[in-house]
Image 1 (cartoon, one colour):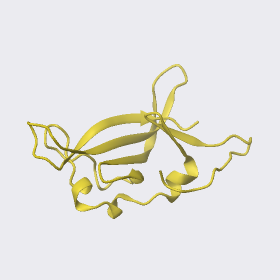
Image 2 (cartoon, rainbow, N blue to C red):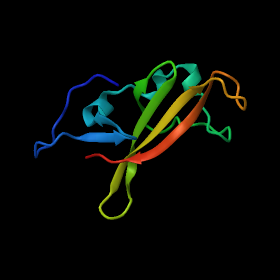
Image 3 (tube, one colour):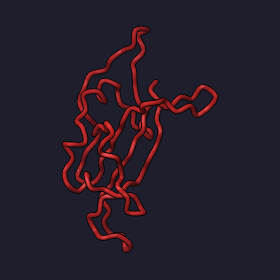
Image 4 (spheres, rainbow, N blue to C red):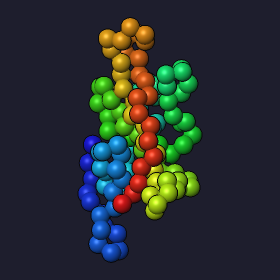
Length: 120
């Protein structure tokens, strides 16, 4: 996870983004590195149809990076209303390096998770 300090909203609540069960302080997202910092492997990740895993023109932030997994989060330009007061403000992508699969070459970076997240 990206290092950072917690921030609070004017009413004293911490602003967080829940990224598939991983919760990030909103300030960490603001200060997180952009996708331009990604190594060649994850920056060229694809989905299961071979299309790019993410649009590099969008403001993706790298919130977690290891040799095997990268988590990206970006703020949506227009929040998505999931209904019943569930407003999604962010989108997340998880990229993973695949090994041991018989349908893709070892070391291929694939998009393994996509989600819309909320800021609490």
